[in-house]
Length: 215
Image (cartoon, rainbow, N blue to C red; front, side, top):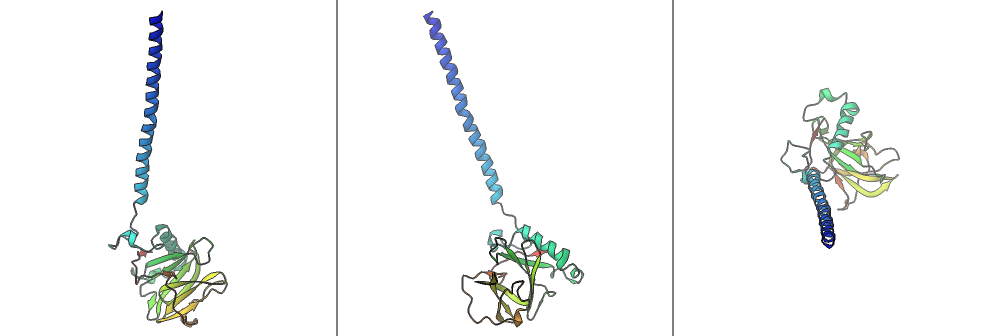
């Protein structure tokens, strides 16, 4: 009787030990799988696709807010679909390229988009054409005879940040009138101060490499 009881107890202990061992191994396996999944996910997130494979510039060297392919698609659709629909046949391949900068001008949480061109269709001795679009691609402004970069001041007029746009070598103060900015900077008042160093410069392709997109 005693021997049978002892054997029964030993058998129970062995079974409990085996069950615990199996339970302890399962979380380790799950943790390993989760770690492997996280590694793959992080690697995919960190892989940056070059928005302009025609140049030799690494993607990380482009200025912030100038290389989103989603934004480029919004701009391209706006240019081809409406804004320049009737002009496309007259443009060369070089004319049909653009750069852009995104910046929130009215602090509504949505970034407006400055679009710059470099071909002869848009540029002359006085400067180039710049488009200012809403985040959805709808048109806010067309600036003529404008040079890059555009300086965005901290001060606001009618809820929108003031701009400094150079035209024919002279800086002009561009203020929002409640509906839009004046479209011809050359006739706007001269900006007689020096823009602060911490004022953002957009479309600053003189000092930074920008990816070029075609439309």
